[in-house]
Length: 277
Image (cartoon, rainbow, N blue to C red; front, side, top):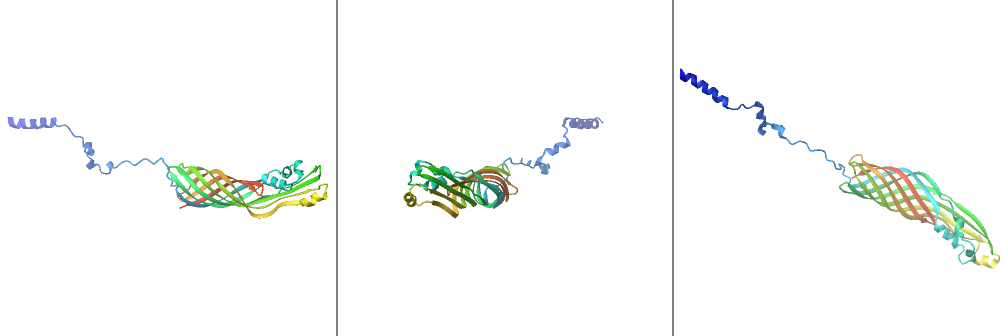
């Protein structure tokens, strides 16, 4: 009887000394956790998600203003009418052909192609462009002066039309995701039709002088497909709607110096779209 009472007491005492294990601790074993040990998803990248590098081809349309003004070339033509005469000692024919700047405005459209190189978010691109303008102005002058040897008269026409142009330029931009502001600059070539001419007459007091110098005389006249050279500079913002579709808004200033004696400036604001390959 004594043994029977001792055995149950020892069993109870033994169980009391063993620490209890919470059922939830079984989840601490990785082999039992299953998908719960997978790594947490990575945070979204903060860099540019758009690949700007590559070739692109597109077109544009917008508004343009072409500004024409008398340049040194027209003044030199007027002075050339009096080369070798004493009249140049009494007046400057070049001052008689000066005109006020004049402008024409309208629509413009064209096409462009280029290639972008990406250095992180910094973008360097090279672009070629053809633009159609078709804007023109006309100007004329007539002035007379009384010299000691007799009266002189100087008349001029200064008509010019910018048909179209080409430019090759570099673009420097910085991408903020799918948006890229940029600056651009390069060389420009314009195709013009012109009618730049200066006519003069000098009613010298002696007929031999007049006949020897061939008065009245004229230098210049109509010309087609005259090439003018200059530069382009501007800037804009480009957006990548998709990886292959780009849109832009841009301002561009182009200047063509000494087109048969006339300087021509072109201001254009336009929007465009391009496919990137």
